[in-house]
Image 1: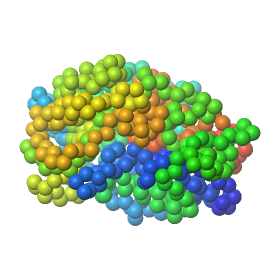
Image 2: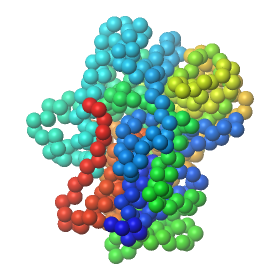
Image 3: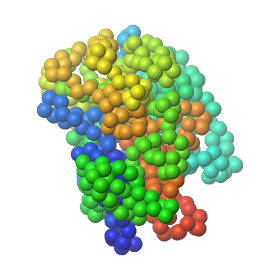
Image 4: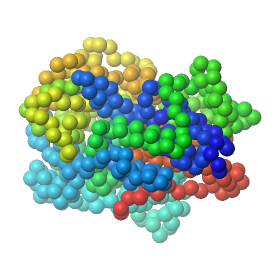
Length: 508
């Protein structure tokens, strides 16, 4: 295919849209990316605090090999465009009831820390937990995560009958919280590792135990991005532009144009029409019409977690922050029951804090203001029940009060910039503020997401609300899968058996 012989419009410059644009442009397709915001990144956005940019979205960068593959396939090297520093301390955890615990990139170092924190039995449980996570990841990485849209029969067929015991060991029938009880008796450790469910916007009491694989992903490497995680989006935008993709920011799509039963382009809200042979849609799938999406819109009850976030630049004291920090209260169960059943935020929610001037490669002067993102989970009701100023003030007092009870004092100075579920709904329409698409609850939750193809020919889907799900690497992979599906369709026509393969490249 020669350049400009066919035209694709990519709607949304989030991670999935950026990756699809880079792959399609490299393949010789004329690509135009339209984005309603003024910058790329989608949820991976930056806002100003204290005169400096603060990452206001995803902050944990893992699965580096996915990004290396994207750049390598375009004939470039990731390290020429991003400075990545391997984190030795993965996260620092603190409890209001007492105790702090660091997890490390080195498994044995983490086991030693857990032993000192909770005893030798818990350290042995941790090592068994890590082994189980690796086994689950090895089983599912290529056969589920990297597939176009998995199904139970398809997964069984790819694994083969001989490996059905491996599939059973991924524990799809059990919840994460239940499986953690096999390894940990200390409730604080079950809190800590139960937090993996929140990485996909779910409750550990409802999410499948397969999410234990996140432990293995983190042990394969967590990296700090020099300049902030938003730099990842900027680097991929630049890659796509070097391949020939064009970007238009501050442009709003009104609708996808469908003519003669297939996609013909997009209509902008200013009346301009962009003709296209195909459209890659990188937005929440619920914003599409029933004619366009291959699965139903996500109901409010099925939405993933939303959040309330505070971005600020301030001085801190009393607690030695790492780059990633988590502050726990005592009643973890009520946190998720409140959100998913009662549609409210618990009285003492867990607080995640990204201290963006801390960690390996940083030289934060003691006592100087530092950039921070604080986050608590919330129900995704931003299109129904907005939080008023008094509710936000109350949540601020509770969240910052919990951190202070764990030893961290923050001299806020200027008022933080607060984003609520209503704000996230405004940024990402039809989501209700859900940051992870559909909640990954139950055995079949992982199979409920849409795949790479839309319901109407010529429409392709990317982003955190479709397979393989949310997070920086998964959303990026979704864009690569969508681009590969589109190119395979054009190369083979409608009657060829359509198969694609996206390597995940991890060391097993």
